[in-house]
Image (cartoon, rainbow, N blue to C red; front, side):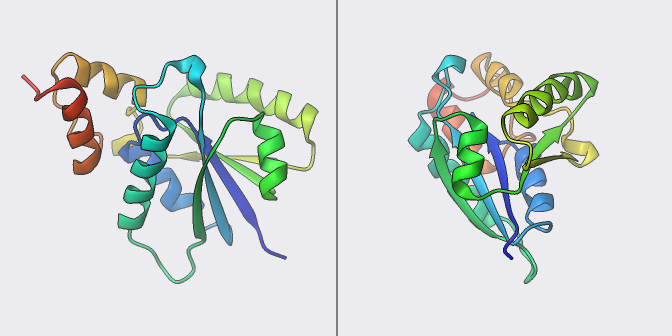
Length: 168
């Protein structure tokens, strides 16, 4: 039986921390679905289509081993557990950076299990050098003319520069 995992997120923009979690998750399943959430409530900087395209470009560039999962990237706008069920996921991967992430994620796991008890949630820690990276902070630094090149890939950095201008 094929093991399908789901890594959902807004990915606005995709960071080195996200890519690290993806690299770890795809070693644990046969297929990894990266669900790019529409999530208009968060007021994303990039459109859903732009975020899906960025993710596709970045995932293609990741080194992979023969044992790594097939990766599929697609947008979604429905309740996470409905989406997980629709794609056949048996596990949802979530990245953790700090204790505050855990508190939020713990609440989400409890609610998700009440909706769909058969789907497990697995928390993955990004590598230590990427643990402080958050998309929201990357956008704020870029908006204020800061250099975010150590938090994102060169192509994502270029997309941020196109939106906000060169770092000061």
